[in-house]
Length: 88
Image (tube, rainbow, N blue to C red; front, side):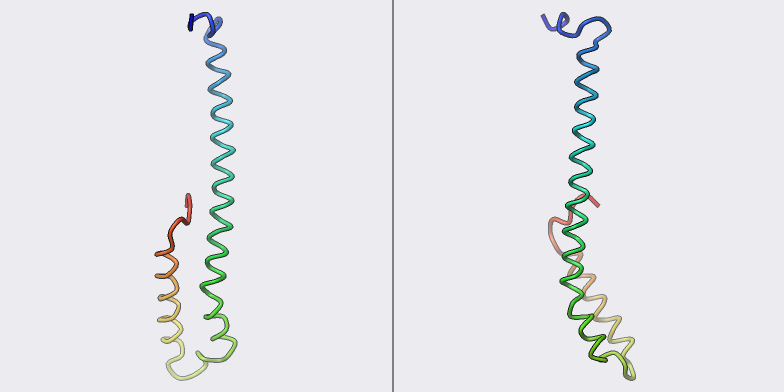
């Protein structure tokens, strides 16, 4: 019967709980790493154009800072709309 499988003090159940917790931690850490990598790749892709515009001097003019803020906010909004960014 099931009680016989548990052994004295429920040791088998405790063993499985420890294993399950370790697996949960492993998958959580893996998912967090993959999420971080995916988010970094998305940010790099989104901000390539902004970097190019900075390097081209687009923002180094009267009103350039305001233009930079508008472009940066647009990129933030694009990032927020990206699906599947993960656990954080």
